[in-house]
Length: 121
Image (cartoon, rainbow, N blue to C red; front, side):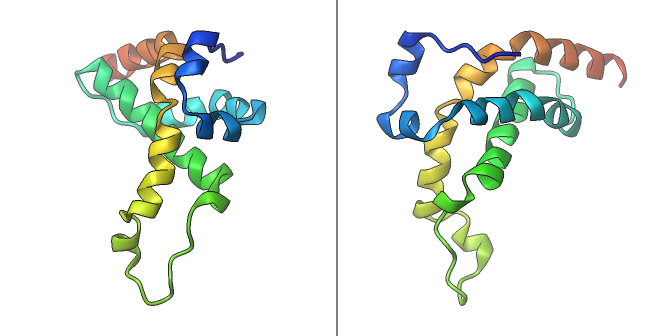
């Protein structure tokens, strides 16, 4: 599967994100999508299901591939509080810009998975 982002879609992305994304990053999304489909529970609203799968995929992507961009938590800070700090949120917000493109790219796959999960309930 090959990610296709049109030039106009690419131009919408922030310059900061454009500098950070590589072709290997897109391969990560292609390879790991199925695991996130399996992990997310079925909900009656397809758009919510799609967003849940893709946001979970991007969230894990940041931890797996962009961990070095996350600030290190000081030893004395509660990690639950630090995980919602502006420094962490800024990094995730940057990568979450790609969610609409991934939702569009994987729409057919996600829809089929959503239908199958719905039938198996």
